[in-house]
Length: 183
Ligand code: IMP
Ligand code: MG
Image (cartoon, rainbow, N blue to C red; front, side, top):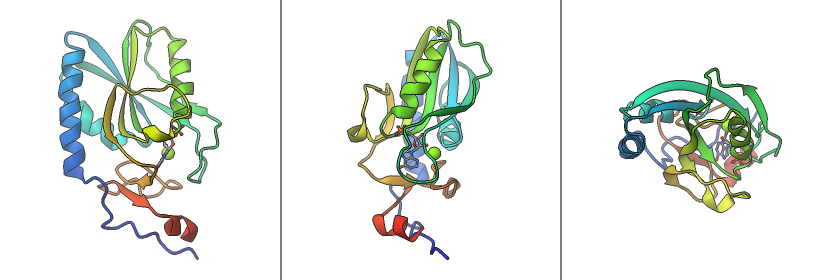
């Protein structure tokens, strides 16, 4: 039986810090899209809590939509193969789309998703990510709005999972090498 990783109390960002940052970005986004309608396109499941925090701080006329795009299996290493398991339900033609992402690592998932979304001819597409591992990027994906830039750590909590677990931690924690070996 694998032992549980040591996550409890290992806080990279707590709820208060995340909400404060969501408020700051929400105010910027509200100004950037002033007078415009906005489709907030959340990437499930990871962006759930971040989208909830952020969307309440955006005072534009906003519509919610969701996609499921994944390139990870059950490990911490990207498979490189992107699968869209849920498509947006809204008509994105000539709309401002703000993709709400949990974390960008290599950028593979978003590069594929953005290419697919562009085929629907939206008016604009931008990205707002809670976390950015910018140093790991292997393409030119550049989020316009970033909650926090982080080092190359495998993070969990606040929506982020390891093998579908730990999404409900009310803070962002991280796995260390010996945690991963013990799973
Ligand atoms: P990318 O395609 O390499 O940019 O990976 C993006 C996706 O991988 C994210 O939307 C997450 O679902 C997952 N991911 C990347 N890094 C982490 C992490 O540190 N913790 C949990 N999930 C991660
Ligand atoms: Mg994931």
